[in-house]
Amino acid sequence: MTTAAGGQPVAETDVLVVGSGPAGAAAALFLASYGTRTLMVTKYSRLSDSPRAHITNQRTMETMRDMGIEDALMREATPWELMGNTTFCTSLAGEELGRIPSWGTDTVRHADYELQSPCTMLDAPQTVTEPILVKAAQERGARIRFDTEYLSHTQDEDGVTTMVRDRLTGAEYAIRSQYLIGADGARSKVADDLGLPFEGPGAVAGAMNIIIEADLSRFVAHRPSVLYWMLQPGAEREGVGLGVLRMIKPWHEWMLMWGYEVAVGPPTFTDEFIRELAVTLVGTGDFEMTVKSASPWTVNHQFATTIARGRVFCAGDAVHRHPPTNGLGSNTSIQDSYNLAWKIAHVVAGTAAPSLLASYDAERAPVARQIVERANQSIVDTGKILTALDLTDTTDVTRLERQLALRKEPGPEGEKIRAALREAIAYKAYEFDAHGVEHNHRYASSAVLPDGTAMPGFRRDPELYAQPTTWPGAKLPHTWVTRHGRRLSTLDLAGQGRFAVVTGIGGQPWLDAAAELAAALEMTITPVLIGPGQPVEDPYGTWAGLRETDDGGVLLVRPDLYVAARHQAAPASAAAAREWLAGALSSVLGRPVAAGRPA
Ligand SMILES: Cc1cc2nc3c(=O)[nH]c(=O)nc-3n(C[C@H](O)[C@H](O)[C@H](O)COP(=O)(O)OP(=O)(O)OC[C@H]3O[C@@H](n4cnc5c(N)ncnc54)[C@H](O)[C@@H]3O)c2cc1C
Image: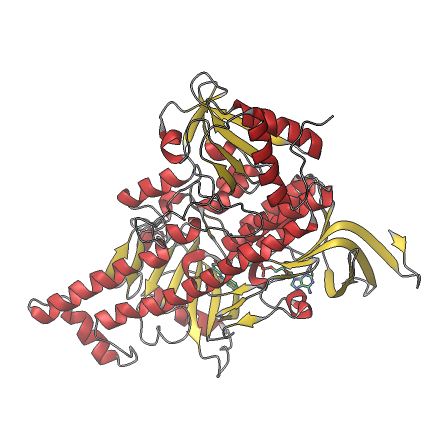
């Protein structure tokens, strides 16, 4: 620590991260893993004490795999096979209206998911994820300060000065960094201080999360799921569209979700209120329970249209605020940080120009908009279940019961309800199986070099189905290849903070060029040669089917496993390979890269 002019102590770091939620903890982990000096400060004395976000999608798990902590998370999470069977019912003990196989657990959809990624989906509440991320970040050198509150920041040409308060002593001090990441959640002061422009309303509905311990195995173990949705009188008002019982630990820890009117304010969480709600959702009072916590929150529909200014970047809920529908909250937050961290790491290391950092806003601001719209639309879509039952207001209990009874009656009215209900529940695939939303990003920015081809059109619904492509700006497709006979994913061939050059037989000049240019740039570029008799083989032939290049063509893959540039065919000569690769690297890194052989 040094001292500023006024005698005030100044801590120094390359990157200051504010917040230890999924966005901040992941940013600290990625940066520390890349060898960037990182300090993470967080306001409270602990990590999240509430399970909140939980659905962990394959793309997030790919980032964890890249960091070498996929297994740690899998050990503590609820596994994929217990996540399906999203159930719509009147209560756990009551009438079941239907189920939708979710998160790729359906027989047909499972293949789509398995083809897309080496990773599984899993259910990992924030209380599980955050400690794993933070421990790994710390082990890799990130400095972490609890009880440290962000107060303000100013930036100048050379860096950012951030004022923080030590909440134990009240002492305020400055932290000087090259870059600042505001991962301080939905009430982000960093985003506020930056004056980021937001679109969409906050607090469109009230909701409450109540955590209870109760063994509900006998109601659910035969239809394992993360979510059970309850059609109850008044359940569609506010909240997330219906009442919800969410599994936290199978099958004895639960989150109860219910709405409240924002204008009226949240209820008082008395023991009686909570017990009554729990009994309503479970559908019987014949169970023991202990209340762990209760808190109100609001459904937001807000995203920032600009997510960074100068040396300050915001990630996570700081720039996208939306309901938990689709389970995109922490996933998107972690993926924001994965997109940002390698860019900052390269700029701090001097291997990329600061102009690379502008690509964070260009690539991730559209994602913020997309997921906020998607998550809110999913609440609207739940309304189709009511429409199917020809209901507009479930508080008319007589009508609600009549319509539910009609569903079991012979005759055209009952038949119509049954068909409409089946359709409405199947439509919820846009919430529970939106595999395309999770994987189909196509980045357009300075960190992607177009190859002149048009983006391949989507063959199936782009929200539901992931479609791999090597089109520059898309994620490197996954498939299984082998090294020394052992199976590994194509995603395992790249990442770890480095660019990779991926080619096949006839593409050796690309690798020679990569080695020369890497030496000149003082960075590492991972060489990957896939083909018979090569270090990596494609015995199933699936890589050849996915790569969309000739054998000797090449992909320049970014550290976040996105394709930065692509060349269709083998190079005409060693010089041509050097020239193309130098041009691609120069374009992506934003700095001159000489194509000629170093003297
Ligand atoms: C009650 C509730 C329930 C939710 N349920 C779900 C769910 O079921 N599923 C789902 O996908 N998503 C859910 N979410 C959303 C999900 O939790 C978020 O999307 C996710 O946590 C975002 O991660 P983040 O790191 O951006 O922010 P957060 O997890 O909110 O983390 C913000 C961090 O910043 C710190 N911080 C804040 N201000 C300061 C400051 N001034 N100085 C220093 N540190 C500061 C906080 O201490 C915290 O560590 C829920 C959110 C809430 C509030």
